Image (cartoon, rainbow, N blue to C red; front, top):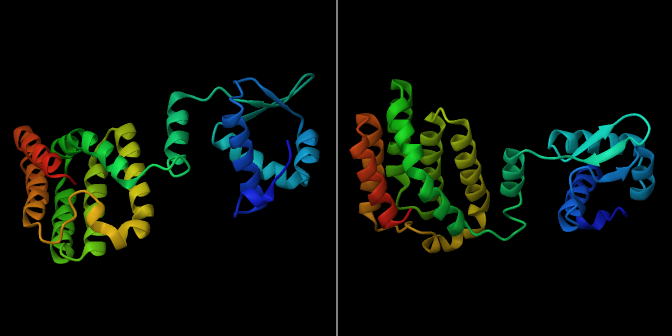
Amino acid sequence: MTFDRARSTGSVVDSVVEQVERIITERKLPAGYRFGTKQDLCEQFGIAPATLGEALRVLRGKGVIEARPGPGGGLFVTERSPLLRLAHSVMQLREHGATVNEVVAVLDALDEAVISDAARHRSEDDLRDLDALMTEVTAVWHLPAEGLHANWRLHRRIAEISPNPVLRAFYLNLVDYIESELSAVEAASMEVPGFKAESEDRLDMHRAIVEAIRSGDQDDVRNAVLRHRTLGR
């Protein structure tokens, strides 16, 4: 195991973290695999103990590596929970070349659960926020880049209402991924499903979503979601 600083544009600590994770993934190292001692890793990576210590703090926080004391101890690959594996997979979307449209397709499948939760649990403060965001969306809808960003701010705020932490976290992370990729697609925004400057239907459809949340009626929710999905995002 050698430290290859050229493979990362971040700090030395970031590079060590990235490469340990890459080694585990590429070699398919099982839970319980022993990397060696801290001294072994310092020598193999050619880094100072303080640098390794910081990298291990990050890796332990991510549930990748654990330290075991005593004879035969050292640094071991952990048995990560399904939720941690899911979080890691989301973080690797860019590395695996996931497109914005592929992520949008997954969000379409989650929309009914998210909007249904919002309709059940929204407060007056939530509705005021959604009305303000809908006003913003309306003002910039015909401006491709601004319309994209405003649309996702609206969807993010709707998801924040859900009391389901798994649904909320997964949805918001996927929206964050799309937002982070927008600079790459803004010039070709017409290729993102549903973003057509002349589409008044799509603007009305977003108003229908907000009104369904306001009404709390699950039939309204299903109708709004079906229209949203049929027309594309």
